[in-house]
Image 1 (cartoon, rainbow, N blue to C red):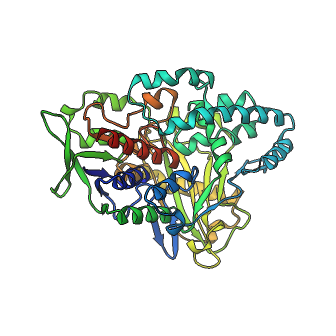
Image 2: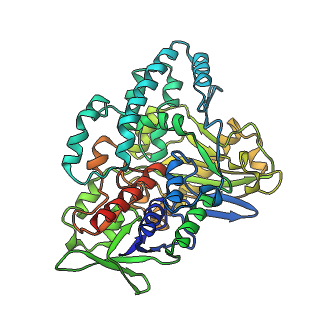
Image 3: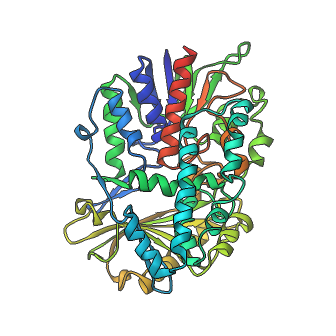
Length: 490
């Protein structure tokens, strides 16, 4: 079969490699001048900045792609484990060093609040149960309601109707520790107070498999996967934007894609790694969308967006880890501002990325490479980013200087930023979201946009907005699901 994959993010690359290895002829059409989608790479003034995903969990999903092609990961890239996984810092000066050493975690919990040690044991056992039941669902399609009914008893038993925060808080009392063990949904576009507790399995996932980094940055992982895809005979076309998915009127099947320059690419199946809402809204004519109507897509709940400042410093801050989670003064109220009120708050909770803690070659000698990521409301908010970008950037950098990075402003030698408008215009993301459809209970599994279109039987979707969701394990699993579906379809 000839297959066109729209977009070269990790979901698209995962599907494309698997399909090419199955013997199909796969062409990836990528809008931008480099592969990777959100995992783009910026290079300026001797610094290398990974634009997007930087936290690698479930590395077996990467190894699988090389193994099914009879190759070895280490011949293409070097993955190294991180310790700590993250530092979680609080404004009172306390720091939780989050890693995979259970005894070390317990000792820190004891220092924060001795009464929570027993609670953590119970939380860990509960998250282990969620992990055992939930992980297999990540590579299982939920195309039919009966798929949901089969797992419903397990999901009820695992308290999936609770939020991650609600799940954690029944075991942990210290407010800081509650945040330590519940912040993870933010990494996949979710509100810890609204995301289903199934995502509590992320704690066990990290404990089981670790948190990893690709030397050279996430871009090196993209390059390794692209090299594998091309060695298998796949074609990657950059600067190639798709304008429309072509649908045959009688059969309602996709016959290929039309590019922005007018060229037509014929296909027996189309896999979209583009934003799921804009796949339907922009690429599929309305007459072929009974389920995925404009109204249906507009009524879904969408994740927040991000404001990210990439910057290089001419000094190193060696007391900062590779991944830093900087918790602000408010937690629940800040989430309400972010997700519900769509209000750009004046306080911050931030993710600070310092890859030169692990790989100094990403910056000139004696320098550090950074990005600081602030979750912000998507474009449903009234924020004018042309007006707000500069003062918001200044406020973030001032906060970092005051709390964590002394004399920062005098040591910045290069920088640039992206905001929700970038996600909308450059990444074709509906409402400028960073993670597409929000991972709430009623927007997960069968309730989430499906991996195969109900309207067009040979159109498949991978990436953050479809099942199982955002984050590297989620989007790579969506590629696995789709490749198996196409294989079964013949």
